[in-house]
Amino acid sequence: MPDRLHRDFPLFPLGVVTLPTEYVPLHIFEDRFKTMVDECLERDAEFGIVWLSDDDLKTTGCAVTIDRVLERMDDGRLNILCRGTRPFRLVERQDEFPYPAGTVEFLEDLPEELDAAAAERARASYTELVQQATDRTMAADEVLPMNSYAMAATVDFGLDAKQGLLDLRSENARLRLVDRLFRAATKRLDYVERAQARAKSNGKVRFG
Image (tube, rainbow, N blue to C red; front, side, top):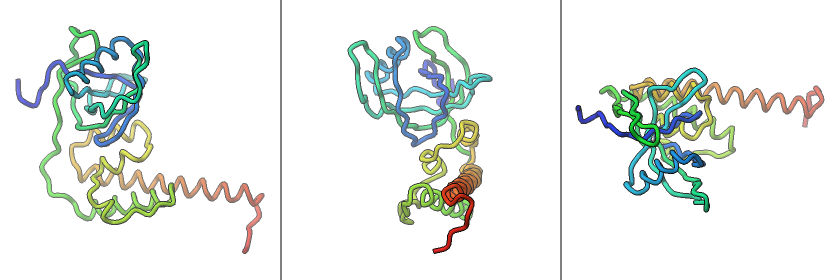
């Protein structure tokens, strides 16, 4: 089996999409997933989150590590905080475990030279979105180290958009996509703010 393929990889099908670097809080209450999480904690091992949509189980997911256990209840339920690490492709389901598992292939990006212009545009549109959404101005040295995943992981996009990012094997393509997503989100925020301002003014234009 090629080194990039890993058997017996624990899987957590969920109605969410996780990106590398993203922090995800999870409430673990089913016995099978309590078993899975306890084994991962014991072995300091990753498990994979895959989007279980209305249509099907997606084949591209994101591995996560358990950053910390937030709370462990008397009945065995847990609240944990996970952090996305790396994308994978589900090659084959395995049924011999008490929890979902499978053979996965960890995915690498295609070799390419970084498109500096695309990176600059994405960082600029991300900075503008953060400014408009939070009134916080990000310093240039704060944004510069962030790649497409790191920026997108802090924005609440729709699941389809996040899955699209996870499916892409090109950082340049992801940068172009997040740039469009950031700009669209900024426009929506601007529209909401203008609509709220109009509602407060009862339709009148205010001066001074």
